[in-house]
Length: 124
Image (cartoon, rainbow, N blue to C red):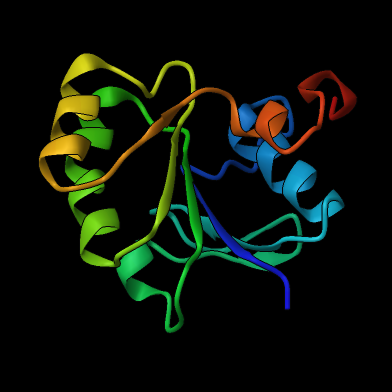
């Protein structure tokens, strides 16, 4: 069974990493769940406003949010008990990292697209 990844900060804009990540994880065979407050469909997949709205477990959260928003969302990720959390460049402020660790998470501070063996430039 494919691992479930939530792309938190999913974007409709194919130039943004919140969209590139969706395509990269799909390419690697993951079950992708886009998280976007606006709802709708991204890359053909229905979105959820929060990881807490997803009616099943999530294995990985990869975060593409401004730190001010990430500070609020990290609590939801901890509440959902997501075991693997990636804070991508730009989302990895000291405050978000500290909050994640305070909640018992061990965030990975790196690009999740590269982490799964993909090149972001392959997704124009």
